[in-house]
Image 1 (tube, rainbow, N blue to C red):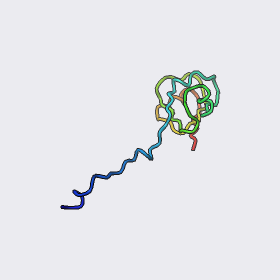
Image 2: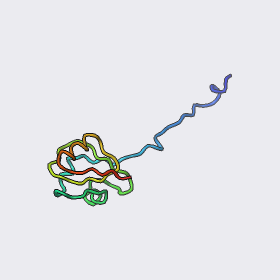
Image 3: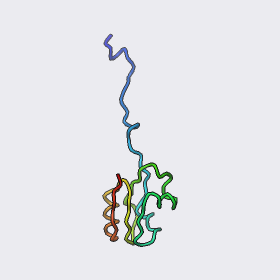
Length: 94
């Protein structure tokens, strides 16, 4: 019997190495005052994320009507467009 039939199936799973983001929608950023610098610490203190240690991703669902400077680890294309359309600035953290 060939060795591949004698051994049990062992495969590779990439889930252990995947980045797990905490997501925040652009519509939730409307609670901050205009011209505020939205950082990970500010998101944690306002209750939008649960941990300062895990990376944050901003998604483009919702409307933003004030200029904000948003600092996060990742942004969707729609989120970048919405923030810039409101006159804000996008900063990507490492």
